[in-house]
Image (cartoon, rainbow over all chains, first blue to last red; front, side):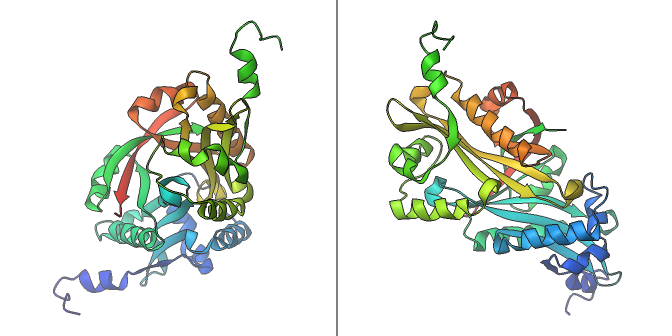
Length: 159
Length: 159
């Protein structure tokens, strides 16, 4: 505990990244996602069904979370899934999605911890690269995490 | 066959999109991908293994191809995989990847056919949107296909 000089440090050391657990439904995981995008209502049953569906992909689809030990709430999350290609000699690409840090927990580098966990996972899964889409205003954050700007994202909404 | 006035049309009518088959390895599928990116060598065994791996995802990972009936060669391809989220009330997102048309088969709207097939698939799989990354120079093509520019792509290479 050599970092105790700074008041925040002991707390930050406790804030470790782990994989999403089924019990995180009751720790505000969905409420955290609502800070990112539309996510009105996910029932316990819907959550469990989707959790099992994603779990069946094993290491090919990983959701990372940080739980605040003090409050028992999930305060940061992000996901990565591994796409298997024929390109690049049957290479693999990691896709990072749905990264969000609770608005009350900013400034503690939790976003960087989440991204580090996800990129480490993609690397160890054998991916040759990891990609993500972000707004122009978040570009600086991802550059600090070691990313570089590449292409542009196009979207078609169905509803 | 009311479109026979135009010399190209009868050929275009034959050029239908279908899913990748394991026999497409011998129809130049890998050589076509080489026009898009690095794809040095994929052996018959590697192709078969990856094909089976992707097939196990069923409708969640579809590779579309167009075969030239005259030459028996694959002249266009693109893929889409369905990501399952918690966001958007356990919504799904289609990710389009690896779209390429043979350089000798441009100008026949094969790219649009491929994109139409992939977006139709994503829609029918229940996705609320479909996304892709492209270079600025290909933006106009995707706009013609019904896409709009959204965010920016960031990348981290591991090698």
